[in-house]
Length: 474
Image (tube, rainbow, N blue to C red):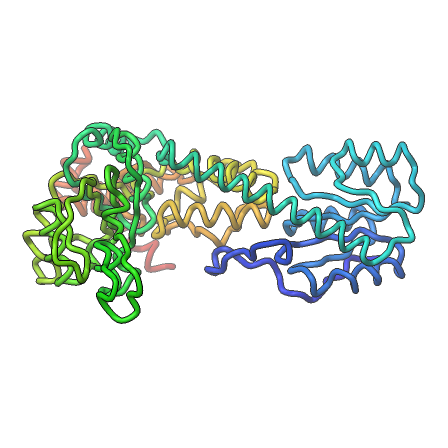
């Protein structure tokens, strides 16, 4: 019997912007059954109840399917050789995958049961089975797996709260950020964190809070995701009856962060009228809830973040100049991932290990070619994009070649080139890119470029002419 697809929807692709389905009903199941009648019965029983159900008639087909797709549960029917099935399950576990397994057997052989349980099987059901018996066992296994995943995520969140530092790497650009964090953390001054989308601005803010010695909470709010009308109430709170629907008084996030830190992400998106209120809070350390007739003193540190150049928004009258100077007491600029490509292998391995544990799959042993591919890419989404690519790779079992296409040799960004050329490049490619970069740095002055390169003007002209002919031929 060949593997037969169920026709139900596939596991969502994380890069498509969809979240993975939560709960046992969003699970994927692989049935290994060589008897056609039993296989049909199991498919009718499970298809429609769970997100993905696949069928294989033997272990070899099952292994091919497993390599192409992640499965949360394996339902393996014996008398497919018990020894082969148990060895297969053991090899899956040894490889790092954590999907549970249920064995279906024609008789309750004690040795088989012991071997299966030692290999990690969650249950052993004797044939002929009852539908409700299989469904109960499947649901029990998936619920236990869901609880384990939630427990893992809870521990991981707690570790982040305590540690608050997950920016892995050894590049000098990252070390400078770490030095700045250590320097500004003990002070009570306002901090502005700048960086492109996905560079880890909130992680830096959490690191500052963790090292500040402040005992209050770390409270984060995205100023761009809340309407201006609601954001004021979210930040400063309101009294009962302050506006339609305010049936009771409510403390704002500044009050929730008392003694701690409030993180105002995407501060550049804040509306101008609210910017005036925030400036008053920063200067006087007092807030006035909506509808209140008196102010309340607050003691919390403010860390703001932006992926825009606030100075440019000030020049366009889109951001208050006085608020900009009040926020810009201490500034930390986070480098883009393309400016620290030597950290990509470290980050990739870290995400592979942590996400593999979360998803219950084996980490990917990336090879040199994988790292070259990742280091040659521009990463417009930075670390967040890299994390999504690694998650997709774990689900597919390999790094997709179309997920981070290498930048063309002639169009590599100056930031990327400054950090080092990809090791896959030839010496001619390195020479060409370096000469063009030097020429660009002197605004096309060939004589000055030749002097800096240590070659004659004639040599430079000859190489530029050769590269131009090559380009025209293409």
